[in-house]
Amino acid sequence: MSRDLYEQFPYIETEDIIIRKMKKVDTDSLFAVCRNKNVFKYIPEFLYAEDRELLKVAIWKLGEYDFAERRWIIAGVCLSENPERIIGTAEMFEYNEAVNSVEIGYRLGEEFWGQGIAVKVVHAMTDYLFGEIGVNRIQATLLPENVRSKRVLQKTGFQKEGLLRQVSFWKGKGIVDLEVYSLLRSDIYD
Image (cartoon, rainbow, N blue to C red; front, top):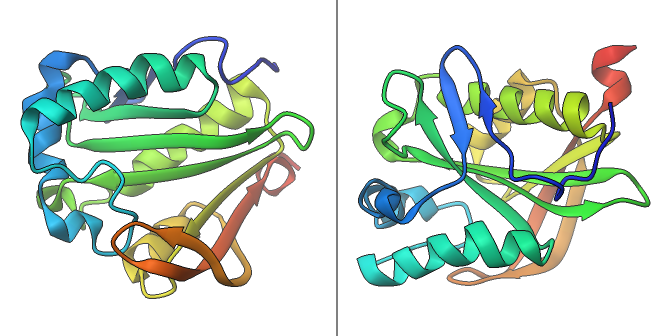
């Protein structure tokens, strides 16, 4: 199966997690994730929030405007046992139809670290992107010191491709080096 990533906002459900579009009623649970500086130690401060009302506007922008403009998909992550509580985000962006590739990102509230949830989120996203969207390449970039995320990517089959030196400007960090990890359809299905 192959279809456009922006044809429909993703709803991904597994036995343990749900990845879904966020609503304004999700502001409080997302705020609990996004106000914690530890969550943003190794990722861009995009979505960092000290103001609940600004976050409510951001949820609308991410769910409606950025999706409609084909810029970014930021979905909420919930545990299946509590589908109304956002515990993190699953991100899909830099969709390139010509190359048939997409970049992913993820973040979880600190209380959910070290429980294997991030691995489940990445598996759910890769299954969705390979199976329903039909992409050929999924990649993730991260700061070299982000050891936890490296482990998540390695556990889900991603391979390190290399280091991009002084490649990006991240708010709160300045110009940064990034490691690139990728997973190809042929890594799983061949």
